[in-house]
Amino acid sequence: MLVAFLALIVAGCRSEEKKAASASESVPESMRTVTDDLGREVKIPQKIDRAVSLAPNLTEDVFAVGAGDRLVGVTTYCDYPEAAKKIQKVGDTLNPNIETIVALKPQIVLVSTASQLEAFSKILADNGIAVYITNPKSLDDIFKDLAQLGDIFGTQDTAAKVVGDLTDRVATITRAAAGKMPVRVFVQISKEPLFTIGKQAFVTEIVKRARGESVTANIETAYPNLSKETALALAPDVIILSDSPDNQEPNDAFKDSPAVKNARVFRVNADLLSRPGPRLVDALEQIARDLDAATRK
Amino acid sequence: MLVAALVLAAALGSERLSFFDLTEQQRSILFDIRLPRVFLGACVGASLAVAGAALQSLLRNPLAEPYLLGVSNGAALGTMLAFVFFTGFEFARPVFAFAGAVIATVVVYRMAKSRAGMNVERLVLSGVIVTTFLSSIIVLLTSLLDAAKLRSFTFWLLGDLSQATKSGFYLTLAVVVIGTIVLSSQARALNLMMIGERDAFDFGVEVNRVRIVVFGAAAALVGTAVAASGSVGYVGLIVPHLVRLAVGSDNRLVVPFSALAGATFVVLADTAARTLIAPRELPVGAITALIGAPLFIYLLRKN
Image 1 (cartoon, rainbow over the protein chains, first blue to last red):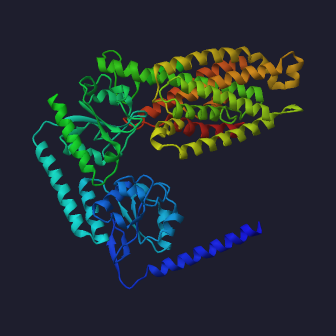
Image 2 (image 1 turned 135 degrees about the horizontal axis):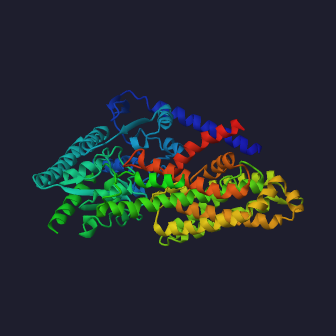
Image 3 (image 1 turned 135 degrees about the vertical axis):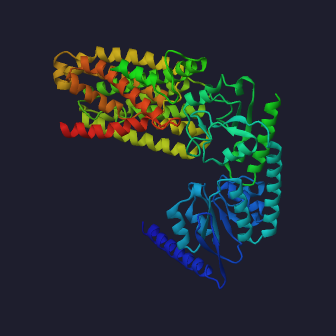
């Protein structure tokens, strides 16, 4: 009992030391200010060598702008690119382990609003760690994030090139889709219970750019739990399944829909559809190909 | 009243239907989606209310209900295991749920039984302990298992009738009819036991046999209801109370009327869940709890 108590005291002192150390490190002569997606001004060191990403799309972003080697911590969800799997895990997006993060001594922690935790940000701030919050809702937002991350890591040239390439690929799809009849698409995120994409989902924009028209584009919220009656009445021409183990076939409500009757059901990697990062353009290209194939059938 | 609720529920939904001029698509909406769900809701409500009514009389405790006694959580854990290990088999869910309900009931019963015999306070306490223990296992499994595999489960845990199937409905219907008949047949014995177990014994009631029959029937009712729709709370608690206010405390009336009132309550709550924010949906368990909790407080203060 006494031993345990003493051990606790020692551990307490250690963490005090750590706090003091990181606090003194974080006030070097030259700081700069960047503005994150929520309009918060974030003070960061001139050169970032140690960063933690708390979302898989942000990890992909950082690797895309050529700064993957500076990530010292990522979430258990961060499995792309391959190199991300070897980085120290700090918990998942919703339950990051604050002690692990502080121990890694990052200069900046990248957060997506999906995982934004206020109390959590405050603890990091108290430890002299900057929290940068992103909130991408569209392809343009993703491109902005990439450019900003290029700024943060000092890899502006790589970021500009990546954004340029992605913009060209999107433009190619948009040009090809122009003037074609839109296709009525239902995107099924989960079969039971039935979840789809709504007005605020970034995939709705992707479907539209790929000459599709999401039949649930007018429903409020990003990922509505849809009534099966409405699903049946929507009778989509194409169904896109977000490819995950529990979502391998259309919900029974679609059994008489044109999509199922004409075998126009496609699968898209769930990671591509759920992560607002550079690979969303891969999803766009695939959906555009699928919709072209569907109209030729 | 149940008939009126059923008609109302059939008439309302996220899609507008007129009963007299149905297109093929509208027929499909009505017969394949809406009606199976409405009838399943009725069976689930009846099951939970009848089980609650019988347990309250048996234990002479107005708070007794399937949730408090660990029966529901046993069923929930059973269903969760079926979800994880037997994804393909539709009938694994009710079987596991029933097994879970029975095991939880037996454990609670054994814990409560001391050398001095069964004591009601001890029983309720055991029920609470088993319930919280099972909840913690469910939470533990939820954090350990793959999120994608459990998405439909976590939703179902809130009480969700949207996953209604015709076969699920037939099974629940069979169990609720048999269960209600069995429990009604014990109504006279339950009436005597409400006075006191000694008195019941003196009147020639086989107290132990009645206990086993009532617990067994309640476990079967709750098991199938939970397997079909998850945790629809408060039905087993408030419906029998309301029924007693209306017809008195004779179980020969309370048990069958609880079936009808429970069915009506869940059907109406689910109609609200389907239509309030259409075309999106709410879990029905949220609605029953939202109505049930304040209503229970009101009943408590009134008595």
